[in-house]
Amino acid sequence: MDLTPEEKTRLHAENIAAPSSTAIAIAAGLVAAILCYCSGAALTTSYGPAMFCSPFFMGAIVGLFAYRRPVRGAIVTTLVVLLIALSIAILSLREGVVCCLMALPFVLPVSIVGALCGAVLRRYARGRRARRLLGLTLVLACVSWQAIEGALDDPARHPLHTARSAIAIAAPPERVFAALTSRELEVHGHWPWFLRIGLPMPIRLVVEAPSQGGRVTGFFSTGVAHGHVTEWAPGRALAYSIDRYDVTDLPFHITRLGRAPTYGFRAERVADWLEIENTRWQLAPRSDGGTDLRREIVWRRHLAPAFYFGWLQQTIIQRGQDRLLALVREQVTRTPAATDLVAAQ
Figure 1: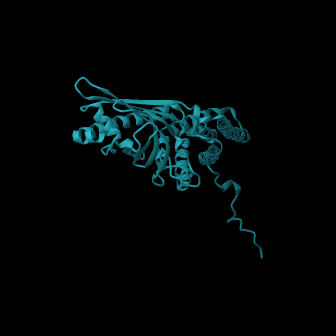
Figure 2: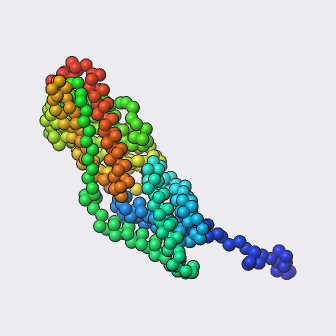
Figure 3: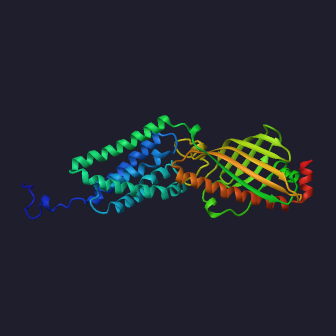
């Protein structure tokens, strides 16, 4: 039996369509993105510059292999990475949906800049072998950066941020202090939409042991924070630090402050994105018999770069604290004065 195909049905090499340069570039960028993400998760200890700048190397590889429209190829590759690669991370509860959406406004421009740089490098890398070698060099450079950053990174040296807010309350300092410490302070109310998307909203504050070193419990929309009093001055000041969290965030949501130990294959620390150092309430009497209530929160940022994530954290926490003080004022003025006096006594 002759199994040789007929001449008419035989496919000649010149008739087989070769994949376009755009498809090759997207495939190469996708492989590079997966490698850089996996190496970053394994080698780095926090979400630093090496982790968030890895899309630059992905975009550079796309621009290196895309003969036409490298910017569009970088955008398509970024979206494919989000839909496929990060979907695996989200389904395995390694990352949260809201986390990825918050990073997208930074990741997308970085990948576009990388594509433009890759397009420039392509002019000087002639031949497929030279471009493949250059692409491999870019991936190795990203992995090396991640390894060096992971070895030298010290979370205790990450930058500190401070948010300060003040508000006037038509009640004496003793009554305001009693509202903060002598009974459960509930602050149910409307929060801005961009604060409610996955971020922990304060609900209730309880000072269980009203004294220096006493226990403090804060209830959030995504869990419970346990801390201790670091400054106790009745009628003047209250400060406390958070020791641990019990997070009950929803699966696939998983925005920091943290995630519960039961989610995912790897237990995450609450301090992945930020670590609250201290929270301080200060009360000062006013000439009209009211109180100037000030709140200051100090946290250590574990996200880089500063020009995006520093601004983002500062804006969100500042706006959230302003809204919290407004809710405290509503709570104090709505509660009868006799109730606060009995609580203070």
